[in-house]
Amino acid sequence: MLVTLYEIPLSPYAQKVKMALLEKGIPFETQIPDLDTPDPEFLALSPRLEVPVLVDDDVCLFDSSVIVEYIEDRWQGTPLLPAKPAERARVRIVEEVCDTAYDAVNWGVAEVTVFNRATGNTAERLLSMAKTQVAALNERLERELSNRPWLNGDSFGFGDIVAYPFVNGAAALGNKPAPGTKLESWLKNVRSRPSAARLKADVVEAMPRFMSRPKDIAEGKARREYRDHRLDWMLRSGGIDIVIEGIKNGTIRFSIDF
Image 1 (cartoon, rainbow, N blue to C red):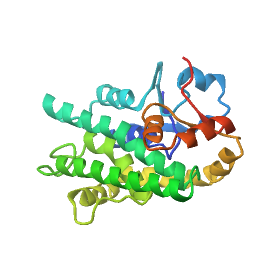
Image 2 (image 1 turned 180 degrees about the horizontal axis):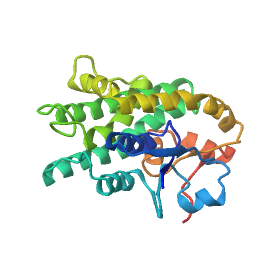
Image 3 (image 1 turned 60 degrees about the horizontal axis):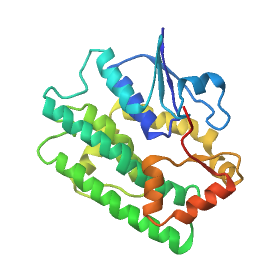
């Protein structure tokens, strides 16, 4: 039975899983669920009402980190994780940093620049903070590359897959790696891979479907999920008024009960 990946092509978490499948050479199909008015079948698969979700015969998984680990264990082929336990732990830390700190900053930038949650001085303050934070995160990743060609080590793998969607997403939002850095070269090298080209092609194909998203959210027809690190970033960055307004207007949502 063909593996099914439920995704939103713009989601960095879905991109992480898709890249792992592609790099492993696993055939799969994709479906884009409606997260605003989900059907009971998808809600049963994803109790958080999030993507990605992976269905492999009778196995159904949510949470991108769990799914990538499953892909590594389920299909042997070329290993994604480094061989040594210490290196495996190191790249899992890279994943944790990207999943939480990096995603939160990118999310905040998109809330301002794409979804127009803030204007004027508030927008300038949030974007300035985000720029500084991305630079710091990129400096951390730069250190990971100080003595290795890939974040994963000597060869492309897990460490690169879990970081790419976030570094690439930040660059697309205007916060690129510093010129002349190893991270800049790394990003260029990853973008040249067939798996990255597929991610880009899927985003381009899906864009017409999501072009009205900012308008739909502004009109209360759809909501953006504020949970965990994303909510934390907005609050500690001085965006509490954005959260309050979003609650009042019904344009944000939080985690749902299992």
